[in-house]
Length: 104
Image 1 (cartoon, one colour):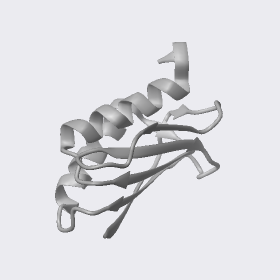
Image 2: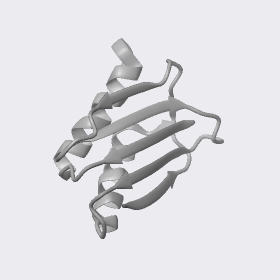
Image 3: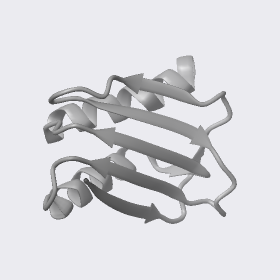
Image 4: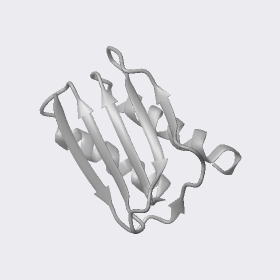
């Protein structure tokens, strides 16, 4: 297992709903927990992954996600069992859309 941490500063979209979990930890999939947290306008992402050695790919996917959503004061925790970048993006977008509801 590998743990990766990313922090993006100066987001513009705050979350106000209750924490949400999407996905299922299983082969080729992942679970995403997203919650509001006072982080001084930042978005913090922690990833626990079974696929060791893919930090550069994770970083690119997380940067792309943050560029799309510009989250502020958000904490995201990911438990991964080998999901592809496309599945990661899908689950993360699903988590934000679930939390934002009609505002997305």
